[in-house]
Amino acid sequence: MTVTEMLAKFGLDPAILIAGTAGGLLRGLSRQRFKVREVILSPICGALAAGYLTPVAIHIARHYQFPPLPDDPDTAARYATAFVIGTMAMWLSDLVFAAAWRWIKTKAPTD
Image 1: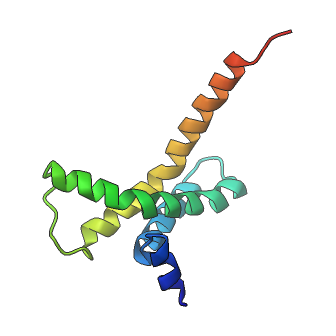
Image 2: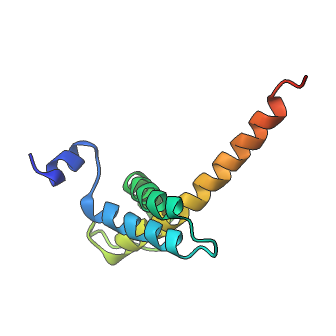
């Protein structure tokens, strides 16, 4: 079984994962405060988010006809969408974890 076949069993397209990884890497390297942890985690987060959210984003864009996308699944628009999702994934996870942490801190019992 090849890597491509294994990824396909999980519903993942290798080209989309690469685009998401590149977006995550861009996000990790573009920070003012350069952290090794983020340079490692951002591409992973970007790849996973792009792998699973790109088909959803393309479906929503086609449903609302914005922007008009060609029917060919191997278009630059698809990979650009994966790249943008990969770039935004770590920012979104930062926001979600920060909100969850604030919620946990407010619900913690005080002595």
